[in-house]
Length: 349
Length: 290
Image (cartoon, rainbow over all chains, first blue to last red; front, side, top):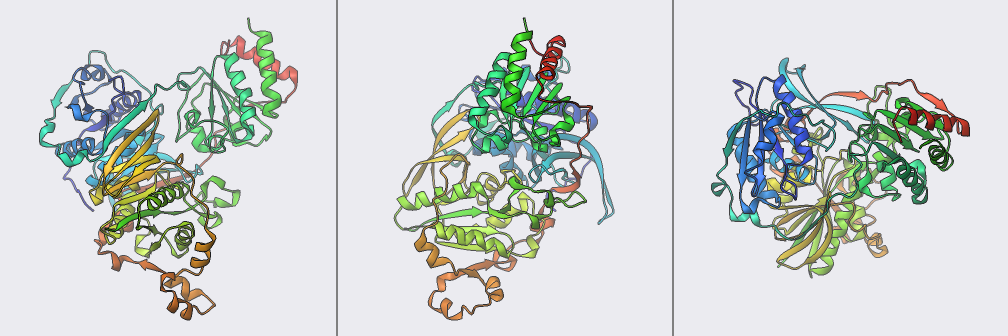
């Protein structure tokens, strides 16, 4: 294989941090820093963050409390908004110098554009859309070799019919992308402090990296806040039509919640993609999740199985989602949902 | 000046319609039980390539696909819709490729078609949903990338303007050539088959396919050499063997778990009004709602 490293001591866990339109560190990056801290503890190593943008000198102070030991910062006016080649050049240069053990990226428009480019240049493995990360060992039968403390990159695969544990035994960094909402944000210590490494970008950036020019951008604040909702009313293919989805909106409104959907419902054109919950959508942990006409493919469950209470409404008593539901109501969405609205209104103050 | 557009396309098992017989008893996937289809976003990519061809006089669209013999179906399908030519990259030595080994193989194949202006592919394939191969091919070719393309705004012989679909908005970007583009499913659907092209290309076969044909195509092919779909194997690609297939794939599957649901103690209710009402009362009392 390629980039063999003589591993003397375990190198650091790196997290590429995204910068929002408002100039803050993105939520998904804070989540990855929190997970990265735990992985670093298990590996007895440090957590390092990469911040690339413009006018971001104040941001390290915001992320140290997540347990960050070193912040590598590249601040230049050409580095915001994000463009693939300049960001990739900075990250690749840094990784070639620092040899990270693990490198995590958000599975976002930015992370999924950048991480494969970096992995190709580093000739190392990358696993997309992980739903869980663990540290563990591996014994390779063919070569009779043992690998200690690898990153287990766990994700549903093949249409959600299997769960695969992927490892990169020989190449470094071990790279993964993770969706927003999958990992929990946790501040380690509000007084936690680390070092700042200012990257000199003038020696890295070349004119040819700016071949792609941004002519226009319209980035909207997400109007839909499913992630923060206490109640999520989600619909699957079984809802049957965009009209029936209106019932879900009515229920969500009276309960003060939001409407989500499965990929099948989105693909069928019942509802917009922004509401998709699951491995390739949003991950939610509401107090109450009402699954309407959802069969429960593992990719969907990956985005909602941490909900405190789950109600499944389904005409099929054998729908897989019923197995993780606290309550299963056997019936059609168009019959049950109006009853729920009626009896909620009748009984609430 | 010639203008060449390479489309990377993949034949995939239709994971959206996985039936019960698609899973073997040991929890692995029975690929043979799934219909093989043209990866949906690669069809969006083909449409974008054909739109470029519509606007640039003399432009040609060449499809590259990597896979077993039957993946030649993808090339014929693309030619029915307006692609000029296709190559099937096929060799047992490619088996077990992860995205890095796949992108290395596609990079070698694309390099054989230099000079080209654009490499266009779907954002991701539905059997993996990784969205990695496009950017990885671009990196190996040393060319810029435009991911999540939704609309071809304009194209000339010197530059292209493309609208990208991002999570929370859109971005319009301009690039000179060469450039790699990955196309999002929200882009225009592919145009249908054109009957003239269907008639012209329906007998297109790879050498391997011809060997299994009952009919003798020798004379037809002598008159219409364009019907031959070329196959490229490892020998044609000038590859470093260690970077191909399983040995070129740094990611390994440690284990595969069948999906087993941990059963919660679930209360089953009917659609009876009283049962629904008592559930809503219970949720209100527990302060879960209201």
